[in-house]
Amino acid sequence: MLRPLTSALRLLRPWKPLQTRGCASDGAARGREIQVRALEGPDQGITEILMNRPRARNALGNVFVSELLEALAQLREDRQVRVLLFRSAVKGVFCAGADLKEREQMSEAEVEVFVQRLRGMMTEIAAFPAPTIAALDGFALGGGLELALACDLRVAASTAVMGLIETTRGLLPGAGGTQRLPRCLGVALAKELIFTGRRLSGTQAQVLGLVNHAVAQNEEGNAAYHRARALAQEILPQAPIAVRLSKVAIDRGMEVDIASGMAIEGICYAQNIPTQDRLEGMAAFREKRPPKFVGK
Image 1 (cartoon, rainbow, N blue to C red):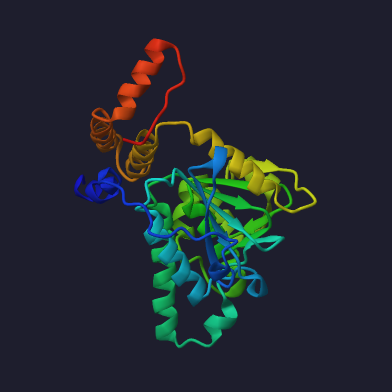
Image 2: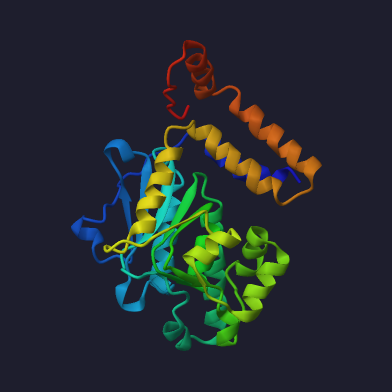
């Protein structure tokens, strides 16, 4: 049981900064469907993944998936990333799900390979060492909601629309939806939503516990993004190694019985004891001052 935990604790290896950190404003990045932006100033530590495929409403196509996998592979090794925030550059939509027009051109064998890549991408998001937040400012349907479910936290505009609607297309969720939705909402409610293909507003999703927060949409159409950014700002001051190890303990502990979960927690706790941040936290408490965590 504990062997898989080793890979989950990769965050304890020395981090390597990215050689280049693309910004949404960089000329070379403008044409990309996935753009990465590291925020600065008081938001330093928050990195945004901006989904930018307007003509296809951010549908999950081959290029989109390849670029997102590339970004995740680079960012997971960057110690400066304390929170990873997924947002859309397309007003009114987070992600409309799989690119069915592109899929129509694929053979059955190609579809199978692509769906496996989608599952792999969702797994990479779920396994990202730092906390992840999805800002749902519009439609998040099918694979779009599966992407949000792979994130740790979700914030939605009250007017956002989300649902695993695959059964209405003759399909079933194939990128983690049948597994992550029951773990989020419980089996019976997840079955109801998947069997019916029901769509929920952001407000309804918050009532059910599908999203952490729902906020009234603004004129710019980015209210969820601003609330997600505020949530990320609450995480930033906390000890980054402790936060990452907390994520490992929770995620791995949810997969096993309580006794095994306690063992996982013990391993994570022991890994945190020798860190400079733990000593800093104790010193700050003793000296009655805010701690200054450095991620070591």
